[in-house]
Length: 163
Image 1 (spheres, rainbow, N blue to C red):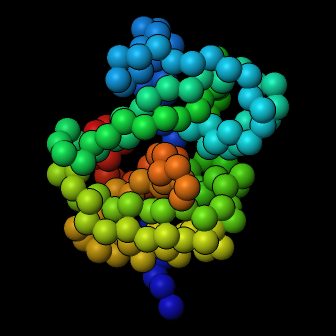
Image 2 (image 1 turned 90 degrees about the vertical axis):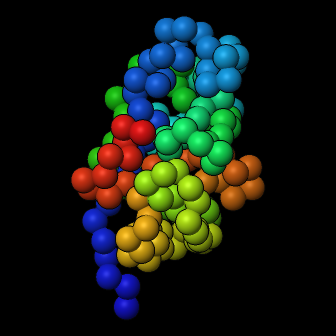
């Protein structure tokens, strides 16, 4: 039986999204694309799927790890206007339960130290299994097909959210 370990699920930091909106530039220095949701786009600001008709931004985002060779920029969707954030607090996103994901483990230096594919059935169990390793500082949940960043999993007292 897997011991459950405490953790926090964190959306994209609001200050990052505010900066993209303010400057009109993403992590690669490119302007975000404005579009209307077809429905189902995974929103990194509130950790749910978009409903048809919502105004969205599509832009390049550098997920939170320290600067180094493993830092990367990938596409993400977010609301085009301010959003209240996730409805469910810091737990696993309800809309994404049952969705297969890759959990990529990083150490405090931002180096990949492992990971796992999960089928969405017991994501909390897989998260706990990975966080048992003291070398793991944070996890990134990634889309299986596209590899895009979905959200950060941090230890409760981790500095991961500020990286």
